[in-house]
Length: 286
Image (cartoon, rainbow, N blue to C red):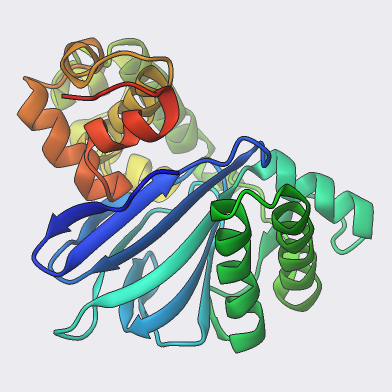
């Protein structure tokens, strides 16, 4: 079994997977000074706060999660996170894939259409304890209990707080801006290691720099340069999972060097790339 990564004085974190639970990442941590920069996830975030206060920055403002709370963030929703009290916060988080949540929603008939959550923070100590139970069962290697609790947690959250996930398409009057933002995103993905300037990117998608900034932020919750850093970290995670070293990964995704990767990766994922790789690829990390 892996061990928590010491992130600083009084801080620790473990970001890992249990092979018997495909489609799920787990994070348990206590953060004090650590802050998560603006980012989003391809799947869902379900966090159980057990100590302190977490402040989550969302497009609509900041919400605070206290012990006994459950934080629910839908896929591709840009957000930040930081401590809301000097002592930091402690939590256990599940990151189920969108496919896993959809499969459970279909099985239990909880939501019609693409499932999502209507609320971000709810006070539900019982579900928070069940989320921690998934972690304990996975750490103990109890696949039956871990899988059972995971499905119960997701089904219960969908039943009580779930709803149809709204489509992420712009309204008709913003269709042209939406197309420009989507094209800019595609170009950034294709040129991740050597991206164009904002002016050149705007020219290539047929708009002005400030118009592109507005359209991109509206579509993806963050400006292009912030989104690019997030996308680089996502790709870095896949490379590390495949066995690439942090040094190789930094070059492949367009970071200047390994320290640059380390800094951004840790601020988005919550653990350094070496620790992330060791938990998944069985490597030694660097």
